Length: 212
Image 1 (cartoon, helix red, strand yellow):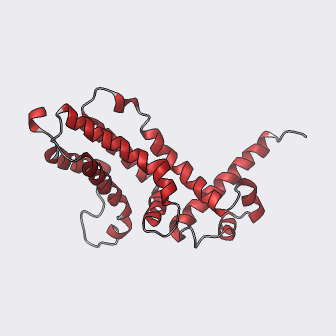
Image 2 (tube, rainbow, N blue to C red):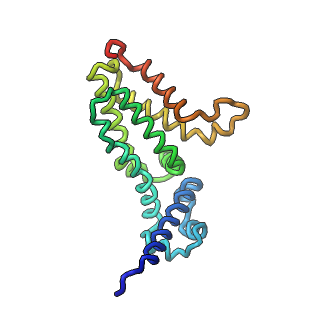
């Protein structure tokens, strides 16, 4: 059997990426249940057989979209900086900086996960076990490290990590509502403004002045 030519392989890659791109947009805007394979095929200008060639079914396609988008979050924690000797607050700052970029570059994923968290589909447990749990545990470990080093006050690490994540996630999940506000000079703050604000809140709220 002859091997596919390079142009054929490139076309196959392009088709798969086009399917993922359209599916990502529709799943974010319409939700998992309201999106059909037919919808995706129509938007991608492909026949359904082409979609089933790359993906077993709608759920397989949905999970593939989530898996590919969340890879950036897994890569975030591979940064050796977090295992180094930098201060715990600087590590938290590094996390906020990279996590902001991750969420900012994946607006559809933010919408998809928001739908999952509101109970509209049944894949939340899989997302938590494979992605969100690791993110939380690693941030929790940074807070514990700061407490053990004496850099942070004796705060509750679980609640502190949860609060940090809640603040940055809400920044993105609330964007559609915030952008509807009129005559509001604070509708959209910059990345540096937002992270600077968070660090200011955290440094004055959890930092142990005797340890700095």
